[in-house]
Structures are given as C-alpha cells and as structure tokens.
Image 1 (tube, rainbow, N blue to C red):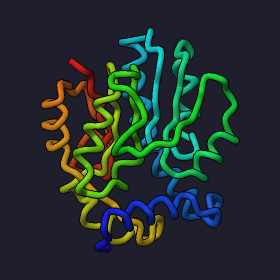
Image 2: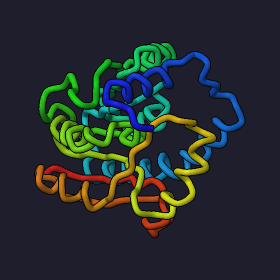
Image 3: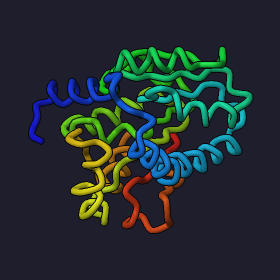
Image 4: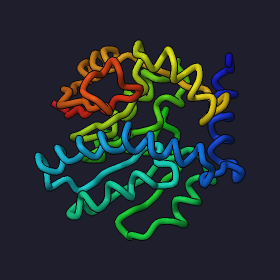
Length: 226
C-alpha cells in the first residue's frame, strides 16, 4: 500500500477506533496468544530487570497504550511506582481504556508519538510495544528520538525485526489475516542501536520469542540513559 503520511495515520487511527473491530473473533484471540509469547512476555522479562535494578522508579509511561492491556500487566509488577500514564492518539481507544481503568495510579493522555505532550526526561521508564510498526517509515527515526527525549532513565521499545524469516512468510501471508491492509513497517535492530547510542543511551538487553533474533518477528529492546 503506497499511502501518503496523512492517509497512513488516518487509516491506522480509524482501524483501531472502529467499533466493528471484533476482539472476540477467532483471529483476534490467536493474535493475542502470539503477541503474549512474542511481545508481552519478553517485555515483562526486561521490565523485571528494571524493577530489580531500580526499585525506586516512581513513574512509568506506556506510549501507544491502546486500551491499556499491557499496563494491566505492568502495574502489579511495580507496586511502589506512584504514577502510570497511558498515551494514545486514537480518541475512542482512549475512552475504552479510561472506562476499563481500575486504579488511581493510572491516568491517560491523548498524544501523537511524533510530538508527545510531555517534558523532556519527565518519566523514569518509557515503554512502547506493539506500536512502532504502525509508524510511517519516514517518521520512525523521529518517533524513537521522541521516546528517548521524554525518558529520564529507561526506554523499552518493541520493533518488528527486519531481515528475518518474518519478511518471507509472516508479512506476505499471516499478517493479511490479522491486519488485512493495515500498513506495517519493519526496522533493523542495528539501526536502532546506532540511533539511541547517538542520543546517549546504552542497550542493556534484548529479548525475542527465542534466543536467535534472526528467527524473531519481534524484538523487545531495553536501553538506559548514560
């Protein structure tokens, strides 16, 4: 699909805002199982490193939070964290997230990943999973730079790994079942490492569904500001 930027983001927003998105469908349940093993389990493993290394973290932000499903997993792991924030650019998605929220430690903001409504280095931990592959290719560098800008200590991101078996079978076939014609972007791990190193971050670890990154469709990366 060869869309301009405005069309690209409008399509992504309308896809996730749509009330017709059937979250109880068979394909959506299968996608949830895959995402749990492929994204959320590795992400939680890396967040455990954060919790052990820095138990005094007082704020955590999930950028591209959707309906808050990942925040539901994170919050119990950080009992001493006082402030959790979810940010998303889709209005109806945020309304659903706010309606589902069950803790006073969590608040939601509407914001665009390319220009977040947050001060620089204003949050101890910034998380962005299951999101960056929906950013237009021309905006990926700016989006990751913006995520790095707002974190004071840790940055955890997930990307769709480029130059893997994922390119050969998942993108052409499986993705059509789950996302139909929703635009998706992949990115090489090395490009992200170089970018974040230039911004003053060191990579602590990365995780995938298996130890061999060339066979992982997704990689979760943990960086720390130096």
